[in-house]
Image 1: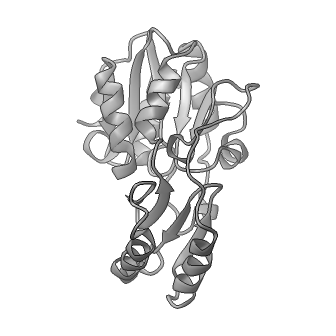
Image 2: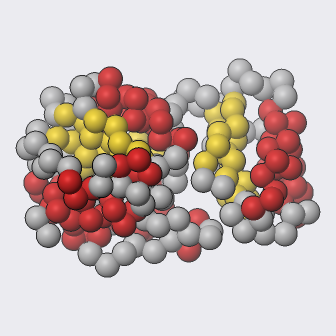
Length: 238
C-alpha cells in the first residue's frame, strides 16, 4: 500500500523507526549516509505530536545516531537492542551479552583484505562485513564467518543485513528493544508502530504486532525510504 494512502495514525501511537533503509537511503558505506533536508524537522514535529513517543531502533551504535540525528529521538536502541537509552538524558543500558573473541577481528581483517571492496565495521560487541562494493563476495564472507562461529553457536549468530553480514552475540534483538521501550513512559500504554526495511527488523515488526500495534516493511508498504519520509511528513503536518 503506498504511504500516502495510509489513514492518519491515532494520537496514542508510538513511532519506532529503523534508520538505514528506512529513514535514510542506503549508502555505499556506513559512513557515507546523508540525512535528507527536512527530515530532522519532520521528526521533531512527530515527537511533539506523539508526546515524545518517538524512538530509533537500529543496528548502529548510539553514538552514530547522536551524530546523525542529535537529540531529536526521545529514545534510541542501538546495536540491534544490545544497548538502549530510554530518554535523552538517561544513561546507556547495555544488555549482558558475550564479548567477541579477540582473534575474530584479526580473522575478519584478514578476510576483507583479500576481497577488494569488502569492508569491516567494528562495533562494541559485534562486527559487520559489508559487501555492497563487492557484490559477489557474499558467499565467501559468509563461509568465513560460519567458520569462526563453529563451536560458538550457543553465544553468537551470523545475521543477514542489507549487503552485509553481522557477527553478533545472542540475547538481544530488535524485539527485545521494542518490548523494553514500550514498557516505559512515554511509550507505555501507547500503540507501537514499527517501520523497518530488512531481515534484522523482522523481530521488531513481530514484537510491535504482538503488542497490539503495527509492523510495516518499507518495501511492502512504502517502496523505499523516500516513501517513508513522505508518509512521516504527512503525519507531521508538513
